[in-house]
Structures are given as structure tokens and as C-alpha cells.
Length: 471
Image 1: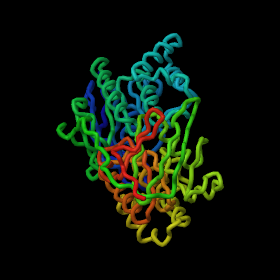
Image 2: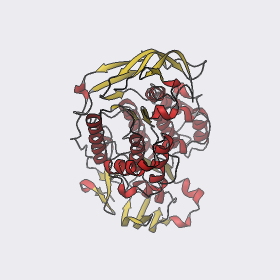
Image 3: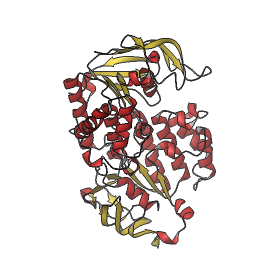
Image 4: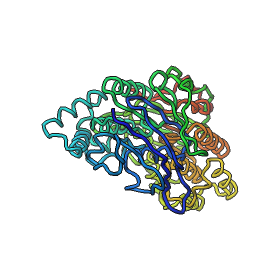
């Protein structure tokens, strides 16, 4: 079996920046399924890029040591030969795609490792069947939900048939059913095809009985330590949203119907987002959750009516509507306007609708609370996935639109960061009396802070647990 190891590895992004790793030793046991945890920004994604041979070619510099792949320095192996031995799934699936459709993307990946043309169709059908993606074969990648894109990106990596598979937050936008199925598929690949699998994940649910090893990357010592498997959790808990009486609100819709790509997603829905409360919008991947948020933001066509304070949305111009309804994108980097984190925060503060609340002192406190105070001079796009999420969230909360729609704001957050982000969201919502609706497949540590749940399934939007309307 192929061996992959970091030996006395010291790495930093710039000569003036501190070391990310300092003489790190770490070896993945061949043929094992391992889970790597650690706080946001500790270097998990950096480690994966080093193990995959992407660094230092595409960023940073190695001060000491090396990464050894099958007895060779990984940087000395040609890219197409390296991809046949070790493959990596990026945290953001969009960065994995280069083609228009699912089939074209899979073909492109296999052509790049020089798989014989006669074998490509067979390999594509095999991997589509493994992940139950046959119905998406000819779909345009841009029309897929975040969770569907994540599954396609994972299928693309596995189509390469590499012996070592590195997966960086592969389930961040995947629903509970999909997560369970993908974990079982990966375990089967490990056992039946002797694959070596290393997953970076903040959420320990679902790994009980799946992972052979649990590792933790300590940001203080810059070393990786082995931990007990007893920390792993099953997928049995559903984490329901508690029942609360719902307030009246400003944003409502009547007989709302949504269609996309010749599919109907929602049929005749009516609801009012309660003021000063947090709601969860749940549902399986691809049912239309992101499309609903886009429609409420006037970024997707719809039938029916959307109102703000009983005035039809069509009577507002887009600029005015944007001051009423804010949308937190699923992909954090799509939200950033300025180059550095500090400039992004300053821009939000300058345009805040609640400047008396979002004072410089409060913002400084929130930056410290979210552990962002030390990254303000860094480029937004070079931050870790978790740091980007926290920066994006704070920037949008500072804007303080009365309605805020959040699409997977917790993806890539470690438990501590998740708790801090939720606390900030809850405080801001109640103190400013905002209306927040959150799309999240992460339920552990989330639902107890929420007030109600809307479930989108079979083209219907249902208020779960009998939430009562308070007039």
C-alpha cells in the first residue's frame, strides 16, 4: 500500500509570517479511515495541500522537512502521476470544477490522469452509480445545490481511483441522509478497495464505527495528536428545534411558487417571518432551499406575492430591497467586496443601518469573540474556510438589514466557533429585532438556539412542531 507522511515539516505562507507547522511529523496509516479535527484556522486545509503536493508549488514555503509519498518527495512527482496516488477534495467544491456539466467534469478529470478514452465512460457510470448521481449526469454544475455540488466533487475525486484520498470538510453542505450514505460509501471503498482515507471535519457525528483513527491538530503546539475514538458520535440524534410562540413580522409571502431547470420546487406557500426570532429552513439537498432564499431576495423569479410591511416587493427597486433583505451566500468568497478582512469590516460599518448599535467598540469586541482580531490585515480569500465564514457573518450582521437570510453559515466551523457565532446571531437578532432564516444541515449545537423550523419537502413548506402565531 502507498505510504504518505510529513517528516519534520516546517511551513509558512510568507517569510514575515509565523510558522503554520514547526517540525511536524505525521503519517497516515495505509489502508485506514482517519478523521482529523482542529479549530478553524489551525492549518488543516494547509496540511492537506501539502500532503497532496499543491504546496509549496502554489503557495507558501517549506522551511524544513518534506512530504514523502510512496518513498518519494511529493513535490518531485509529476502532477498526473501524483493524482493517481493521492487526490484531494477542496473545502469549496466550486474550486474543483472546470467544466459545464457533471459528465463533462468527470471526463475532464479522467482525461487529465490520461485514462484511456475507451475506459472513461465505464468509469463515469461506475462512480455515478456509487453516489446515486445518475439523474445529475447531464445537469449543469451551476444549477446544482451546494450539497449536490459537494457530492459531485467527491465523485470526481474518487473517479481518479487514487489510493490515498484527502477530503477537506466533504459534508459541510450535505443533508443528514446524504452524509450517512457518503460515509458508508467511503467506508466500503476503504475496506473493499484498500483505500487510505483522511477526512478533515469539525462535526464528529456519524463517524462512530466508521473511523479507525481520530487525530487533533493543536494550534498551540502545531502538532497532531491521537485521540480516543470514544469521542465519536452516531447519527441517531435528530436535534429537534424547540417549540416557541411566533411573533408577527414584516416580510411575508402568499401563494409563493418556485420553479427552476423545468422542476417545480415550491407550490403555493404562505408564511410570515417572525420579528426578533431565528428560524431554520431544513430539507434534503436539491429541494430548493437556496432558491427560496434567492427568491425572497428578488434574485430569482417566482409566482405569487412577496410583501414587506404589506407592500408588494415589485414596488421596491432592487437597491431599496437590498437595504431591507440581506442574503448571506453559501460561498463566503462570493460575498467579499474588499481585499482584506479589515477593509471588509470597515465597509460594512460605513454602510450599517444600525450605526448606533454597531459602534467601533462593539465591533472590536465581536472580532475578539470570533477570534478574528489577529487576521484583519490578511486577504479575505486566503483565510481558512471557517475564518471566511465568521468574517462574512459579522460583516452582514453589521449591515443590519431587518431581514437576514443565511445560507449554510456554519459550514466549516469548529464547535467553539459555532457556539460563538450562534451567540452573536442570537444577541443581534433579539436586540435589533431582526428576522433571521437560516439554512443549515448542521443541527448539533444549533437547534437549541432557534425558535422555529420550516421544512421544505415535496414542493411544500411546513412549519414543524406546531409553532403558534402570536398576533
